[in-house]
Length: 376
Image (cartoon, rainbow, N blue to C red; front, side):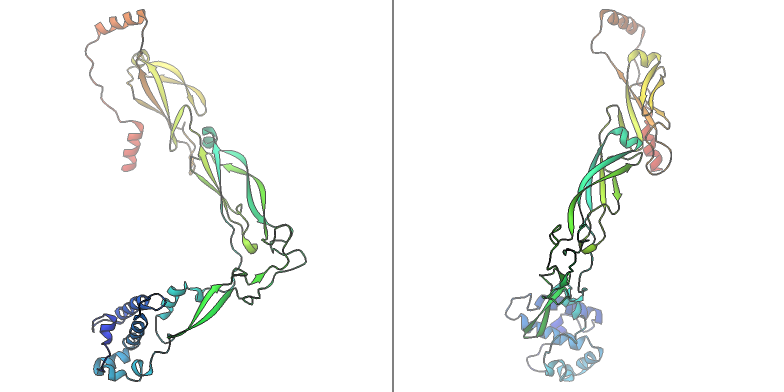
């Protein structure tokens, strides 16, 4: 082994039994760590050169075999004698170059039309509007393609010209000489912003941007069964894209006001029905509200507070599917806080005829049964 030269396996930090994948991973890691453009240490350049010399040999099966047999003498005239002359012959350097310069060298040159931005509109609905669906007219502002220049940004009768800064390429290349060879730094042209063309005679209407801000009115169809937080996507109703690009989308986000009478749980609704102790004990027929209007409801005798009764098909129309959910009537027995003398007397007489009550058998409520059914 030549004096002053470290073992190449030691340089890359891999054992002699390492396969090519391990060697390549070790090289990439060390090259990124010691590249002079990233590592300001005084010995970074020399260390980087040593790492690349080691990989040029160990990354080549034939050179590695010669090195394993004869050491540095077996590869003299290759990595050791010829000196370091750049990166073109090193496998895997393209990935490192991309990491340093953001992949600019591999991207396309001129930027084509870009898609416009998406917009969001918050639409507030009543409980009933969301349940049964509706049509609402909304008004919003968006960037639209300039009607005067057609989106080109140039005054009618003129056209954008080739950018003199980048000659229509859309990017600027700057060569930089270093100890290791020549680097080419690629960046988006600051004058044309990567378009390759510049507007020399801007349109008066849009000031050269190709787009103007306009007020737009459209009708939004809200489907029956929509709920709070639902998004309705209106394709192509967003902002026009730069350089004639396709428009973005408009997302209408629904905000549904709560109902004063019903609680919504998915496709089902809950009605809390207060009854007095006589109605609960003797049973009664009462009028209750539903989404479709009022209806008669029979309270069975002996109804307990918190008991639930299900009325099928009186819930919310299913947004995805057919049919409707159910309506759950949840009974609450209300004990009077104050009594008249006659009421007190009647209740005292009733209390004398009744013994100590026992707790009724608890039945699972509608939503408990629903959760059990979904859980299997």
